[in-house]
Image (cartoon, rainbow, N blue to C red; front, side):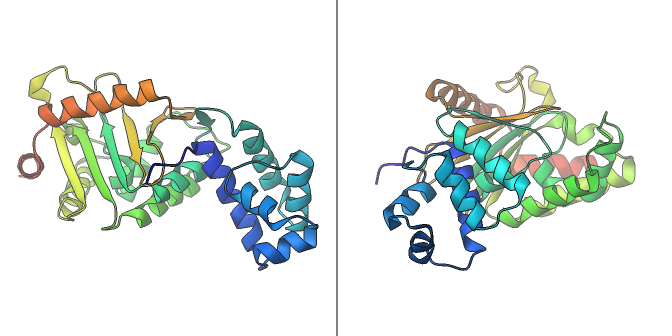
Length: 271
C-alpha cells in the first residue's frame, strides 16, 4: 500500500482535533448531528483532508469546550497545514512526542551529548544547569516531558542511536553522574530494539560533522527529519533534504563501530 501524503503539521492538527472530540464523549456521528454537519465533513477534517473553513473550526472547538490556548494553537496549525516544514519552539514538545509515537523507526545522531531519550535525570539536570536558560520555562516540566518520551521505547519500534565518542568522555555533572549515565547506556543497549553505534574520535571528520539530527520513519507516511537548536526546532519534509540525510546515515553506518564494538568501548571507559 502506498504511503499517504501527510505533513507533520497536518498530523499534529489532526491529533489536536481528535483530542478535542474525545473529551465530548460523543461519537463522530453524534457530534456531526449536534453541529448540523454532514458526518463526512467531520471525518475529512480529522483526517486532514480539508473541507472546512476557520469559522467551521471555531464552531467545532467551541462546542467541544476547548481551552483558549489550545484553540489558538489549533487555529495556527490549521493555517499552516499546507506548509512543507514546521517550526516549533522548544517548550512545545507535543509535536515531537506525537511524531515519535507515530513513527515505527527512529534514527538519530548526537555529537557532544548523550541523546536526550537516553539521558538519566541527573545528566539532564547537569546539562540544564550548565546552559543559558530562560527563567520563563519550568525546566522540571521539560525534564518530565523528556522522561515521557521513554514511554515510546517498545519492541514494536526500532531505534538506532549514533553517538560520537566525545559525548562519552564529556564529564557532564561529574564522575558519579557520568558513571551512572554510561551504565544506563549499556543497560538500554541490551534491548533488542535499541542499537547504539559509537562514532570513534580516531576517524576524525565523519559524515555527520554538520550537526545532530533525527530521522523519523513511518509505516503510512513519508519520513521526516527533525532538527533542534537552542531557540527552535524544525521538521523537514522536502525530498531533496531527506535524500541528503539518508546519505549521511549510510556513510555513518560504514564509519561507526558496530553494536558490540560500541558496547565494548563504553565498558572500557567505565573500567
